[in-house]
Image (cartoon, rainbow, N blue to C red; front, side, top):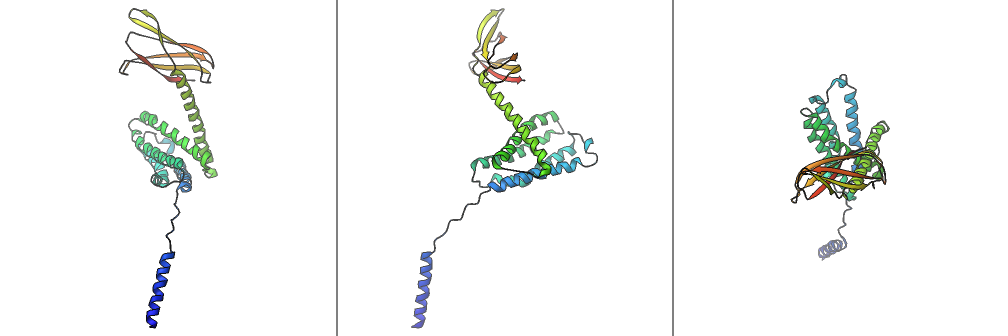
Length: 266
């Protein structure tokens, strides 16, 4: 009888315990702060390697299109990837920060791919490298300004160079957008025809908020299928805010529309 009571009592305890225990959801683990920390560590690891190479005897003799320099550059990139590559698949609370992490890792990988040009066509390397460097600068500045990323005092000057470049790039992009908005409104009209050539002109007001010493533009002439049949160029000087100028080109080609873009300005 006692044995039965013990068994019944244990059964009640087990059943009671099962009924009262409810599974608790685990708190999600996010990578936001770890990424910001590792971004800083990766940058500093890269800059440290760079400093160590520059301190080596004979560094100034290494040509930038040499395989030795190419290997050093790949090592610098890998120093960052060792810290941040994993964040391409991590979970973030801040979706914008997650996009930043993925984009930054892709930029590092893109730079590694671009390094293949260093020893065969260095001008091609520079052409492909500069946009990567500019985008990296913008992301680094965003992490500093919006997410409080810092580096050690010994690397603050290097960080400041990235912040300065980011400001210059952002300024240029804003100016280019303002210029393109102005150029998108251009409507050329034929004003003359002579010997098979026709002259087209358009008056444009400077609505960009920029005073131009020189502004060069490219004018693509398109047929009805959107194919470029000819490209013309024009430039103006002393084009100040609110001023009006006249752009002009001549052609003997038949076209249905124009596509105007900024080529260069100062």
